[in-house]
Length: 218
Image 1 (cartoon, one colour):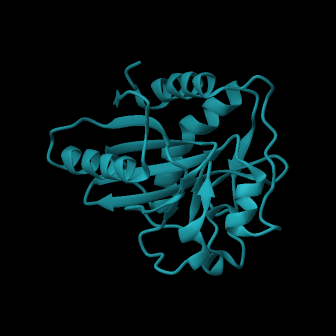
Image 2 (cartoon, rainbow, N blue to C red):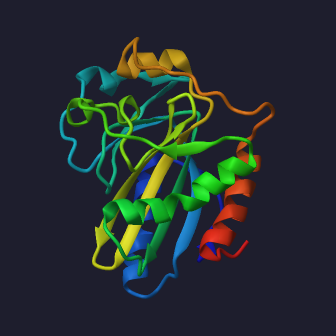
Image 3 (cartoon, rainbow, N blue to C red):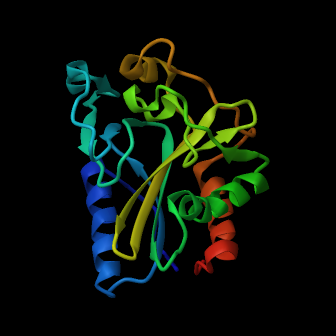
């Protein structure tokens, strides 16, 4: 599995890149791939089947720039991409049901964050998941939550034959005001991270874990 360089870019660029990597992998032109990225400007990504969202989202300004609204190639609900870190894994040849494949793909996240002092475990779907527009409003078996129950990593998946694209958002330094503006006053739950944590430290830890789990080239 190859690791490609960290990228900060607009949401449409990031989603097109993930989609292209999956297509190239299916054609045999790209090996399995791991990458990390952030979104600039801030964005709200919608699941592939999510067609309705509040009109107010069209006019939200953050740091002087209008927030992008971007469609993901994967399923799931809306995710606010501000102060977060996104990972993407493109691979093939994994066997098992959907839950088993999710958990195989998430092993490096659990191992990497454990090395940083953060214990994560799988969530359990809430009754209102289907009707909740906020991905982080509930936690399914495809999501990772902290010991206090706060949802920390929300992941979504796209399968094309034997090929799999899985990407997910890690909540790190999100602004409470912006988050509540998007999802409402009751939606924001702060996450407790180790002191002095940085994106560079996180990526280093997750790359090391991916090397153990997938044989990623560092």
